[in-house]
Length: 460
Image 1 (tube, rainbow, N blue to C red):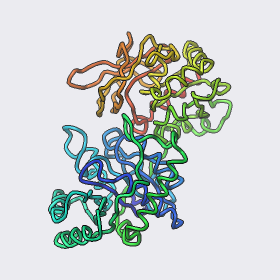
Image 2: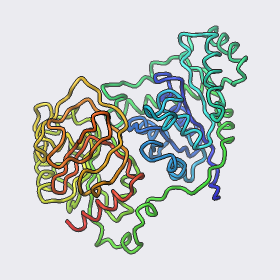
Image 3: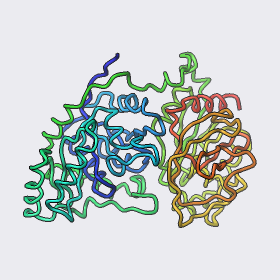
Image 4: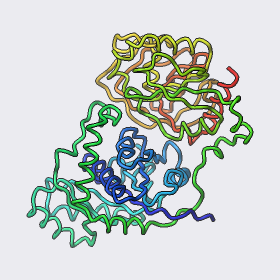
């Protein structure tokens, strides 16, 4: 069994959402980085927004660890890939410590990922409305699963010195050390809207200030030496780091000849902030030249574009601006009509529709999109209904839906996916080289998706 170099690591978890995980995890990352350490940032689950704050705190790409989308077997390798050359890794959990995929037990929970990483857990507890009861709460979380090692507690939203004394006295009975005490500080609050926090790309200056405030609060209120000591106690991981080139299994000569590198344009900017770093890495390893562009500002696609990837984000917030950029909308439509490969997820799907909330979009798809008051959220098991630029018919993978919009009709004459939900519905659109769907997928679980897409870019 191969043992990988041990990277000191911590998992920051909480009893429930809203306890302060993001504040503590991001502040801890920034505080460690301020000490001159190379910090590897990670997020449990399919969240795209928190990793943006993590990247701001560390200067490194924020990466997701999702045992549902990628499978438990890839959590360790993907972690080691992201943590290469780092002094410490901080993993922010999702929801409550033991909350996983609905109906799947511990699968994809923070506890599950902590066990897969053999990492100690720091429990962030919102102590604002309790005193002695905190001991019962912590005891319950510590004893629920003996395989989860809760190495310490950080008390958040503590009201006063007297309140702190009461909490510490109560926790002495549990034997779990208090590694930090944080007062409530308005500066660390980050604004939210219909899908969570506002992404870093939309509030760069304010986000920098918020992360600095988080770092200051954690540095002042937490025992960084004790937390680092706890991180060094993480167990060794078996296996090797994930590698994009190995994943796509592309012959060397195809990765090194520039004349065979089709240019793939990838949407970015404030309206399209949802992406996994591994997607770009896989496209590059499969032989593509990846070039970013901003649909809010660029009036043309990058010169020589042979394929287009439009991920998730908030086009509904920028519908008027996206619509006003008519030259780019026409360029996207022209590329799609030429048969070139176009992969669009969620926000990308909306952008390809005729209109979004009454604003003209690219018109690639004969469908309209609008905001709704209903949140569609959850993991999905999917199968490719037919052949497309991303997958052969019958290809199975897992994805995630997260939106408050609706597209009518919800599927084209050739749907993208069949979803195993209670309704067993079809969803999305396949039209010539276009694959458009609400489903967010993680290509590390199916690296053949990137290989197939790039090959279609070469031959289209």
